[in-house]
Length: 402
Ligand SMILES: Cc1ncc(COP(=O)(O)O)c(C=O)c1O
Image (cartoon, rainbow, N blue to C red; front, side):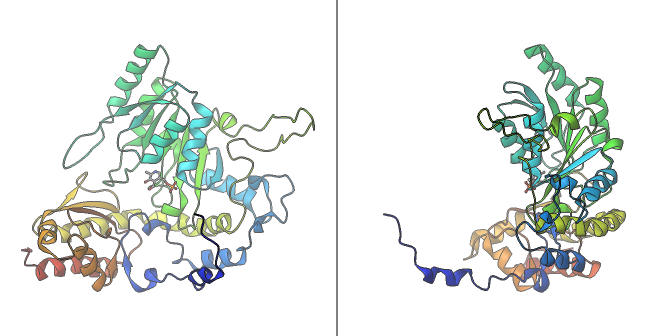
């Protein structure tokens, strides 16, 4: 039976608060690069534009990317230039951007090539457009490295089997499981030899490290701004180069047969508009900070490598993925913590509890056999404290450290 609405429930929605970012060292891989709170300019701008459709005061042409005040029109041009692409549009996330690109470029029953380390949203986007997928495989434990040379073979197989070239080939620039960085440029070159569109997912690269779509040979790129661009959620980006932007950002041509209504200025894949308020403002306000921070990517990699070195001092802890590691997202196998968990009353949750007690969060509660963390944006001091916390936990449970 349907429950009657009782205003008493509203108490739980008052005074919503979150202060872990100030109180703790947060190593959560999906949160480290999207942290906007470190940048006062972003917080201030978001607050000033917090009202619903706050960017629409001067929406004179009916499109987000054409609004001149606040400078969304300039921003769309500037971010495309910064990322070495011709056109950019804001989306509510990387998944929506991927779906929009697939929807524009793929017809039902077309085949697309995807890397087998892609995020689930890539698979679901393919499913939603009715595409058949062919995967580029990867190596096994412990590196899980993508066989990037296999793109050519897969493309040729598709042509042989179906008589048609794949509708697109997709690469996840950095995979979300192991933080492996793939050589997008080489993949782009191979794919271009076949004239197949190359879609590059920069969810874990754009906003963290320098990325130029043109240099990498990408025809289309997607980004997750709330993951990697110091931006509020939900925010993502779809970028396309000439030759594809006309199709992806095509305008509406529908006309109401009775009313005669039409919407010629609206773009179909954005459903006319995407981020009409403080989220778009947050992304714009983050832009200057991001342009500066990507210059320090090498330092972020150094921090991640230092962290790996420290954690591997613990018996049974081993970094998975490419070595040397080239990204801040790190996956550790942790056999020794898993053994502790077997006998601990809190089971796998012991690791989360122990780290939390030492001011460190971000390891998924319940995980002890393996876990992922990200060192992105942390100071050297925070990295050292966090590494020390893991070592202390190991020592508390008599796991040898070196
Ligand atoms: C590689 C990759 N692509 C896409 C996504 C989806 O991103 P979003 O939350 O912006 O839709 C994720 C999320 O973790 C991801 O890791």
